[in-house]
Image (tube, rainbow, N blue to C red; front, side, top):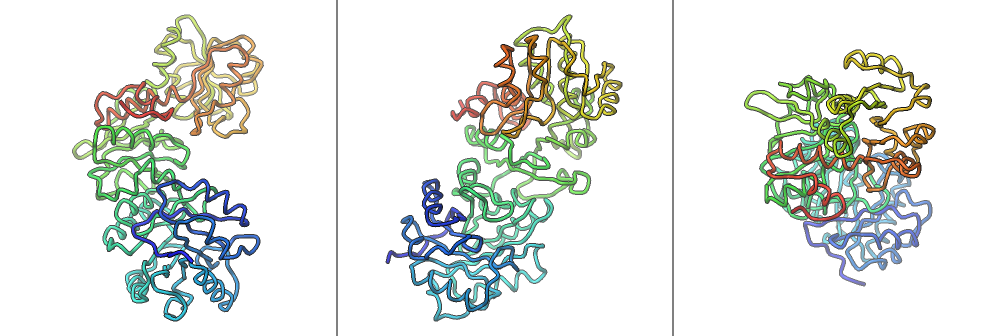
Length: 492
């Protein structure tokens, strides 16, 4: 039996194997910088022998059966729970024992060096959390873990702040749930004893991939950043902004962190009013909050022109809003032609569509707008003094430029956003959508297959991200430097 003690802090690859073969497959994908493996076994469709799992990988192994009451799937008896924990400990594994089970106080059951004691509160932090942490520490376990649900941004950041105050080398506090991403990253940077990340399927709500924690946020380098930035979105998980901006910060040795910031209600959560240590010094804004963000603070020229903002910056006692999406459309389009005497159809009615309308008009295009809700397209056309086209009539149009400013194409199985029939006339196609895996969208593939020139969403992203980084204080950023980061290169 190998020594299964674990040195802290540790980055734990959390796996949810279906069977032993699946465990081997998942273990083969674990990042090299991971210190340990957790096998979440409460959701496994069949029992996997603890002795076999312990031999899958040489790293220390934590075995966990999370109960239903604490957000997991185990609903067996207390006797069965005790037997599972005992078998895992006998196999040489570390065990995650729920404090509420009472087993953590049985010092004959598990060697304290192999005992992790945890408490999970899916519906939020209990008011007596300090007493619960104290009670868990009194068990003598090698580490204790407190996890609480975070339904909104403030709750997520509050849990990270608790971790900062409890950074004793053996305590882990972090959020779970839909708003947990920023709190999880910060809790790791603030010295969490155990940092969990998924490999394959997430084993808990809001759990980020371990590779992302290590590569994008460098959570294996605990620190207190001097400033925080982030992307505010309903779901920022597909955004390329965190890897790009964090890479730019590292290349200039700037002690900043750029976070994913999920916001389900912009007016209620008001991220720009949240006080944090480190302080927020800038936000990127993406769907669906660009129009709401334009109402925050003093608008820049392109915010006034579009009525949408993708950037918020603090200035003394107020915020300033900017829109780098206009440049993101304008610059790649201007590489092709001026647009003078040409026609353009913009598909979409959100913040990106507004930027595309302004950029195309500045280049001289005669613009028409179409949206899935014809009434919204009519209202947008009236605001910008353009024509509108019924969504059902887009297929009958014939323009020089088509811009996809809808979300269609973000998912791998999405159809092309632009009707195939209009591609027969070989227009220029500009797709504002990108995929995080770097693959071409269905819209760009269809355009190229039809012999059209095509501008990808990654080209737009590189321009707007470079402009945004300069607003964040990163000097001399170019679209070419961002493009190198996007294809896996290093910043200049």
